[in-house]
Length: 248
Image (cartoon, rainbow, N blue to C red; front, top):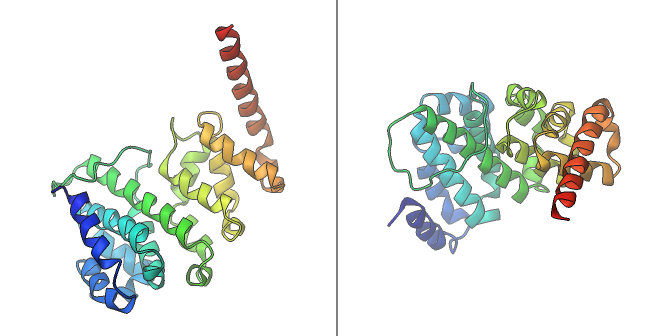
């Protein structure tokens, strides 16, 4: 059986356990990174734990964590800070993250630039799912998410503000989850807005999220980027008109 199928089978069994009964599984899951799961809630501890493990091992953990968040849900809510810390540490690499498909059945332990990129994308995908699932959770509400999320990822956000890449970068989807959530929208700061605006000319996804902020009248945050957004909207309208004329 493939790794993804094995994960699904194991997690389906674990989903029937009580929250307290899952503690041993959680401990085993993080064992290679820290014997004390609670210690990983500290950003510096998580960063050090990620740095001393191979990209292949970090990729495996992030892939498993994403499945755990999806399958076990609120039974792992109290571990959300540790999961967030590890994912942010794994995502805050040196190179800029672009969206790509991840082969979840890749069982090769050999490190490579491609695997390092997949590690970062997997971390951001898990982070997006975590924020979406626990958006209104008191556990996350007690964290300084601006400092814990956007500061470590500020270089990546800055790169997106300069235009990003074609398609939808994984980090942009993390920002979008926060924009869509009433509970998380307050943590969307200027760095996030600049990233969205910077991607508008090349990403319909970014433009859609900007339009959503305009609809809910959260336009004050967008004012500094109005010329870029208007230009992107004009380009989208022109493209749509051209397509319609070609069909006639």
